[in-house]
Length: 603
Ligand SMILES: Nc1ncnc2c1ncn2[C@@H]1O[C@H](COP(=O)(O)OP(=O)(O)OP(=O)(O)O)[C@@H](O)[C@H]1O
Ligand SMILES: [Mg+2]
Image (cartoon, rainbow, N blue to C red):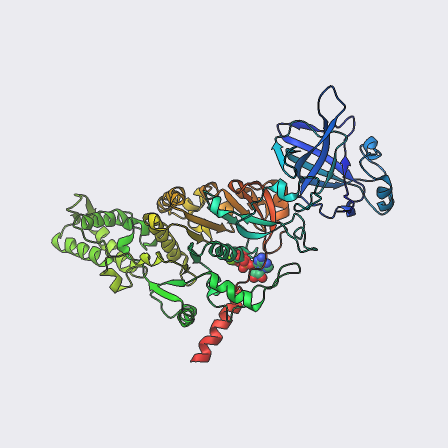
């Protein structure tokens, strides 16, 4: 080691002792020259070394440590210290000459007070050197204590707990990036990082919740997580929903550029880039059919994907696969409130006859009842409920309208199986949704949730990524204001069932959003692993991030995040600097330009 460890000393005196109370254990330390501690940053993990008497009768002291994190930093005037006595305290454990030579005088430095929140105590295990036993905080640190930064990981001459010991990060698992509490990961100078590993093999509940504003690096992180999941076990299945079209870019490494690494980030060779592509295994691209098949982007993407060997499936939702016709009520262009119950009634009648409730069969049933009953009230024979003739007529118009959204694939209608069975695929699936309207997207995601739930037993070790989760599971307030309260309630309960029961079958959800305030709280509640990327502090509270950490998140750069994953051994928030993974990713403008160029070249 040989290096001088710079320490901060207790900043307490007779009138301001350290305390432990219901707010936890808070202590303050002072460093005369903060430049000596470049790791000073909010959230940073610190160690406090202290000693305690072995027994009351002896004068034997033994060392122990407090582990904690920085919750505040403040500069104090060297000329006017609030707490005079302690500033001049000398500690026998420090070499006074070193301190003196480092001090550049009161004119060039400003002492800094470091506020720390203490998490636990660590003591050496006598018979197992290098191992530490943890306990909760029993008493405030003493005047002998001093604060410093732990080493990153164990070295032959480590004499105190390392960052790896304190944070309890597993040694194996998906590599999500490097740990470091300042603006760069620890160890970037020496290229010896402490990686945050997410050990999915030993994790029961693997649902993840990711929050970050636009441009924070969510999509890149999603791509990286998908990549790491596949890398860890090629039999894992991946389903990615792509609402913006930029996930689909991973299909085109030959013309979509890779992410440019920043200063300290690793640079991948062309060979590594090609290898990374193979990790995903077989790709399937699922593209919803629309009644406007002229959208150039989609057509070009389908063509290019086919050319590069991707299994492309163009499918349409069937109306008969809805749990209830009224699930499509938000698409009705009518004010007739009786239309939805009438359709549900008719569908039930068809089901009783073992007939699917497709749009065409429902239309036939409507017409038949209209011609048979000339009066102003018509009774549905199977349910015995009567409706106004005008309701029947409005419902007919609604069904005709709904053909914009459903039953576009005639072949699928005569088939026994749900077109969504295309999601039963051993590889990586991308569901392309960029060309759909918000309404259509919602229907697709709702149907996917319902299909996943029905097929959960088949879907062992499947990871489903939903971007913009607030649009499918909105907060109560948002759901009500849209007039879709009932539909959202049904979807939410389906989602909740999927989240609760899905994980038993190892069906895992990765949900991301940029608007956590619009998201229903059941989403973060169901996800024990939480990732917070750049976000403003107001939004961060919906993701349960501590206030002082939220301020840090506010100034995160691309790809940086806080992660909390209690079952992965890390219940406290840890700051991670993710790498630029060896995967294609660019802005959608550039991607579209590229698609256009290719389309023009061929024609
Ligand atoms: N880990 C990373 N390392 C380096 N650069 C990154 C990283 N993550 C993201 N970036 C950069 O940030 C840009 C934006 O990232 P990304 O598209 O993932 O953001 P986003 O949060 O998905 O935004 P939106 O909400 O608009 O979809 C990328 O194009 C890339 O240049
Ligand atoms: Mg994105």
